[in-house]
Length: 110
Image (cartoon, rainbow, N blue to C red):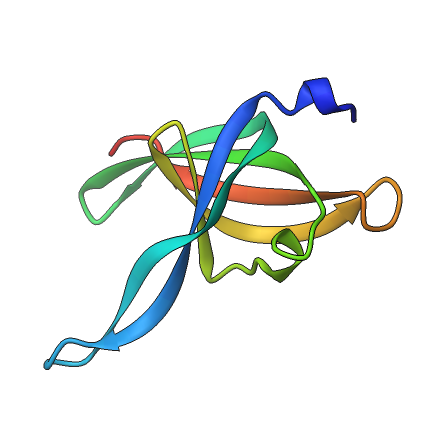
């Protein structure tokens, strides 16, 4: 992975529980700065469940390791080109503390 491979701008939203008077709901707020990332689509698919058709896409994003990015978790959401991705996995790649690889899924039909 080289710096030139990081060709997408992404940002994150942090999820927190908030009481809306009826119960607790997850709300998301902007978290951190916009950063550079590499994007690689892995798979896509459609599911038919309870009469609903849902299209999903699984994507892997590679970002530079930093104090900020090392604090990311699956409770956070990654936003790239207007599409919000749920983070399902985070791992270090290559040398220690150089890059992080985020495996994410998104609804492609929304």
